Length: 105
Image (cartoon, rainbow, N blue to C red; front, side):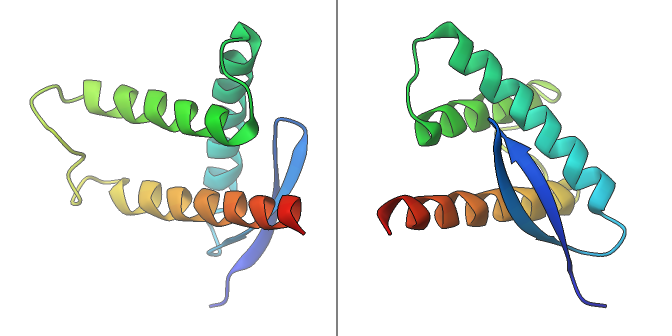
């Protein structure tokens, strides 16, 4: 099965992200969560720039995940949603890279 393109919005910018069939809702929910995190960070006025806001949001979300299991230094790859989280992170990285290329060009 081929991936489908899903459009997600982060800080009022649209990104096209390839997504495996059946994972669209999970991707949209993840993007909405990330968007809320990024908006909260931006609203403090302490972090400027999309890339820095995205990195801070990623760190906050990673911290939230790790606090679910404080004895673990990393999220176990065998966790039920571990591969889904990695796939979504890869897709977000790809979207941010495309955004950077658009800024340069």
